[in-house]
Image (cartoon, rainbow, N blue to C red):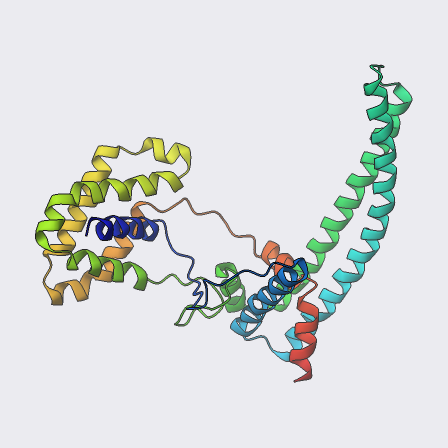
Length: 293
C-alpha cells in the first residue's frame, strides 16, 4: 500500500507540472526497432502524422494548401542551393582548421595569413546562415499572411502530437483538466487512516517534483514550508468535499494548482512555428497527396 501511495505522489507531481496533451495509446510500450533505417522510418512516419494533425486541425482550404505547398517547394529549392554552397564552405573550413591544428601541434604561433584565411571562411559560413534565415523568414511571413485569424491563433497553441486530445483543440496540446481531475479523485479514494499517516510526505514529494522543474530563480524564491502546507491544505480540502461539490469544483481546483506553479508565459512568434512546420520538407508530399484527393 505504501508503494501505491508513493506512486500516487509521483503522478500528482507530474500533473502539477502540466501534461503534454498527447495520447500514446496502449501500444506505447513496445520493442524499439534496432536498425537505423527502421528508426528513421518510424521518425518520418511520426512527423507525417504530426503534420497531418496540423493541416487537418487548421481546416486549410485547397487554396491555402496550394499556397503553402508552393512556399514549401521554394524553401526546398533554396535549401538545396545553400546546402551545395555550404558543402564547398565545409571543405574550405576543414582545410584551414587542419592548418591551425598542425600549427598548434608544432607549438608555433598562428600567422596573420592563417588568421585571415580562417576569418574569411567564417564570414562565408555566416553569410550563408544569414541568407538562409532571411529567405525562410520571408517565406514564413508569406504563409502567415495567407492564414485567417482563427488559424493563426490555433497555430500559436499548436504542440506537435501524434494523437490529439479529445475536444475542440484538434491540432495539439489541449488546455484541459481531465487528467488532474482524475488524480484528485484518486486522492479522495485513499483510505482515511493511510492518508492521515502519510499526508505530510505526500505533500513534500509533490513539492519536490515541482521544484525540480521550475527555473532555478523561481524555485529558490518559493518558501518550501509554506508551499508544502499549501499543497497539504488543498489535498485535505479535496478530500473534505462531498461528491456533488467536488463534481462542481474539481475543474476550478485543478486550475488553481496549475496557476500557482505556472511558468512565466513566453510570447509565441507564429512565423517561427510556420517555418518549423510548414517549411519542413516533409510537408510537400503530404500536401500534394491531400490536394490530389
